[in-house]
Image 1: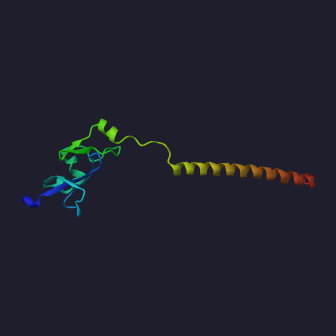
Image 2 (image 1 turned 180 degrees about the vertical axis):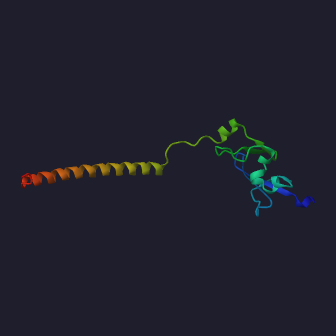
Image 3 (image 1 turned 60 degrees about the vertical axis):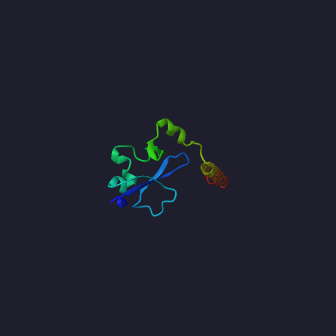
Length: 138
């Protein structure tokens, strides 16, 4: 019966944080994966959704999109909040180059529309003056 155990594999990032988890049932190629456990049942066969949470632990990723576990001595260990803050600092709110270009184009478009509106008013005033000169006031 040993040979029928389902293996649980994880993939790590450069900090040994577990970034993927899956079972031998669904993995065709285990290159880059590390086997961390084996057994029977949903915890093993559906490791992505069950391996951590079936025991009442946190899921692989927290609500802020940060990984919850690192691998130490081939065992998943929960990251502390302090470790997460260091490993996954908040993304800078600085706009990227494309956002800056888009903002500049929007401003240019708004300025052009204001100029066009002002030119329409000037043209209307000129037409009114021409009409008055030709006797349109009589």
